[in-house]
Image 1 (cartoon, rainbow, N blue to C red):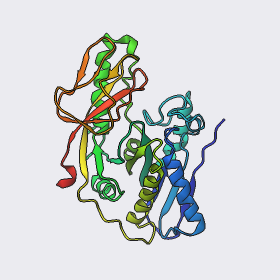
Image 2 (cartoon, rainbow, N blue to C red; image 1 turned 60 degrees about the vertical axis):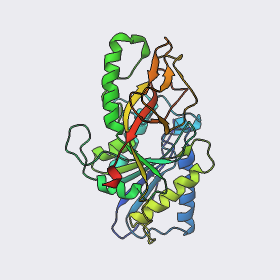
Image 3 (tube, rainbow, N blue to C red; image 1 turned 90 degrees about the vertical axis):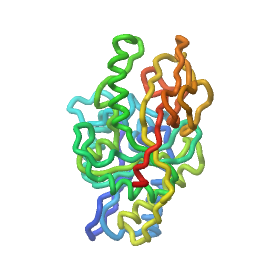
Length: 319
């Protein structure tokens, strides 16, 4: 039986409550390394908490981490919610993690990705009172995102998933062999759960899994977040006014192990309308429906899981 570890530092002075997660996916180790370095600095006095509280979870999914793979029994960052009847290992993680998230105000979740590419940050939705993901802290997320030291931001995650779930439901009638998950809660991960309990959150994709610079990207982001939230007495990092902003538009699932890309795509490779992205196992082409960028292409995606995403340009950070 695995146990769960978090480390908290608290100041007697009031301030925000920050939580930083690493290894939500077990093969994404940069967050764990970045957190370990930050904890060492706190222990040594190189970082001094001036106000508020910060909690670090170096390894959020210990089963997946122990096995150096993305998941334990399933993807922790999908359908994240507590349950009275845990069956899979990630259910036990959720029962521990969700109350911990709810006890904080801000989440920084450190991840990496499989294909080559440059670091970027995921924002939540713009402020809205809709039924999918009502939110009122978009300005807070944007202000931190432009200070994390990366040059690209992207949003539209849950809205894109809602569209993907609807597509999966339609596919279920014609592709019963594809094992597609069409649960409407499928897109809810750590940041979405954090927003659902009144907080705000960013996911930082620190680089490719094996990139030796990825832990450094995560470590610098932790320092920037502590400074921006005034948890430490350090200058607020200057914002990146030239940050590129994109919005997810579509998610495409892998239906068959024979589904194959037309070339070795990298995240944020540009695509033009009509360009061949891949081919289904039955020979059907998968072409870009519009100009944009490919995101998270995964040639080894399990059948029934996300194969790649398409994104469009967005002017959110220019307004």
